[in-house]
Length: 352
Image 1 (cartoon, rainbow, N blue to C red):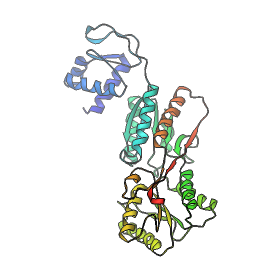
Image 2 (image 1 turned 180 degrees about the vertical axis):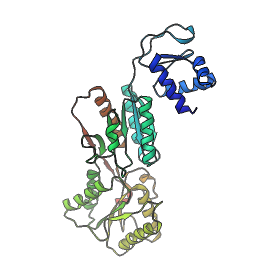
Image 3 (image 1 turned 60 degrees about the vertical axis):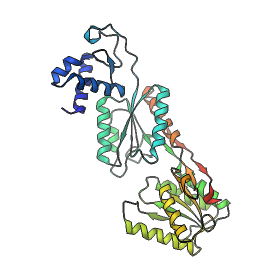
Image 4 (image 1 turned 90 degrees about the horizontal axis):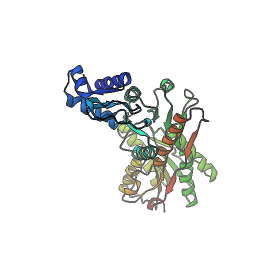
């Protein structure tokens, strides 16, 4: 029997009887008591059971007789358990996770984390397991592209994080960065510095591409500027079309060398760093020949010429998402909310 199956068996026993004794349950499953003790510890760390001497109780159980004849102990009031599923834990989302974790701790909410790795099957499996373990609500950043209507059948409240719902989720609540505002902020900064040929280089697979493009065009219009040629340019991801990526980078570099561009907003940080290195290799000065603004501010400050960057409020997004979901769980009848939090512009050497 796998660990997940044992965990489900433990939870079923506790729901049916309110308590279990480790030695008896281990014998029933034909595994060692050490194995069941470790399972109980794992479930307790996730806030799903309460460990007691010799066994386990449900967290919301009343005063109960403790296994092995130990004195009775009153269990604490049951805490809320909330799942959080994000696509990755190595770029953009670490601060979202941190904000959610800290906000959950302040509210006495247990946060359970899942990483989908941009895989739709993993995403749904993570959600299924969390629901089976008894979460009260779900925070989720869907991978996108495969449809999200399955979220309506969760059976628990949910909040989208850094994703806006489509038509298939008409009433979904969300907490997002206002990326339209962020791109407008970058363009305004460049225009006020005197730049007139401001390009956009946009990661082709970015889920935030549409609002960044909208903000870029809105910023140009507000400054009385036109889109230069070539712009916007869409850059394939590093693991995608290598030839296409090289073509786009070459087209952009040639446009700068020919004087057709004097500034650019680049989404995301990684591509901005790659572009910076390429420009310098071709003898193009930043910010002298081209002012550069990155988008995301994950590693922009670490470039050899520190990059000005739009910084999404990732920590605040994670914290606000926990608060919104906790309010929905405790007050199901409250009005629905959709929150958009403004990013900031961190000005550094690449645009000054």
